[in-house]
Amino acid sequence: MASKTYHIVDELQIAIYGFIIGLGTLPGYYAIGKGMAIPAFLLMAVIVYKLLSFIRNTKFIQILATALFLGLTIDVGIYLAIYTMMLRYFGCYMVSLAFFHWSEYATTALFNAKTLSMDSFLLNHSVQYAIAAITSWIEYFIELYYMPSLKSIHWLSCIGIIMVVSGDFIRKRSMFVAASNFNHIIATKKAPSHQLVTHDVYSLCRHPSYVGWFWWSVGTQVVLCNPICLIGYTLASWSFFNDRIQDEEVYLLQFFGQDYIDYIQKVGVGIPFIPGLQLSKTK
Image 1: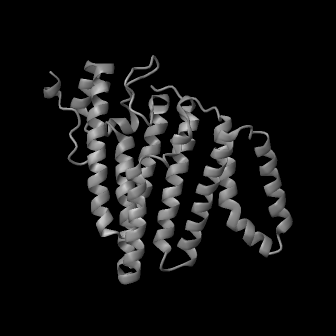
Image 2: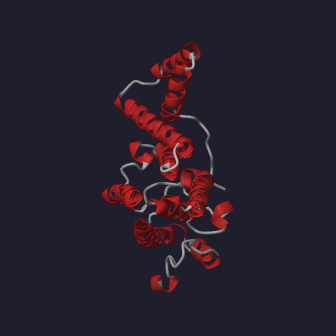
Image 3: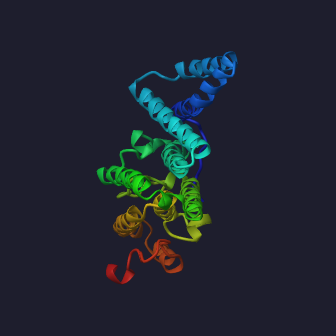
């Protein structure tokens, strides 16, 4: 069993407070407009007071700003999903995107704090990742303008929402189960505490964190009803995880030997048409 620690480090507390401030921005503005300024300001004062006891350096300010931005993005996304018709599903997309990145940091901070950094938000994952996101926004708004009916296929967007929620749940569940064995970077050296995790979601597929991320990624484009980016995201994600899994499993075989061979023979990768490490090629 993977060892789990639940100590809430300062970085996680700052990320939580920043996230709450971001989430509360629009409701706070609404509360002030409804004559509830005093409760809103009192709540904000308490949060600011707690933050002042943590913020000691530039790193903490960066965490706060990033978490606040992601919380505010969810805030705006919820507003669009509830109060607009044309941008309803773009709002859902904003919520899923922002929560995915904030929860990546929060989950890492909770279960593997020693590897925690600003990179744990995964906002700077790669140039290709940023280009893919921007491209999907461009496609969405071009098609919204010229083919608005394409963005109103409600049943399809609902399927996308199910894919997004399920994919993110599987990924976060895998991070929870793996605990300190999980890392955003492929481990090339076996740590003394590194264990082979084969229970829970890992008994269903060898790489549940990648499975979850794959379906979350594809699901975001189903939510947006982006036919071009749906194909692009599927192919790009498949190619990325195919290469990454091949590389990672070479090291896992070195780390765990026969135990990993037995695991490969019993459990599949989990992503369609990705076989993973071919044992015949390693002999």
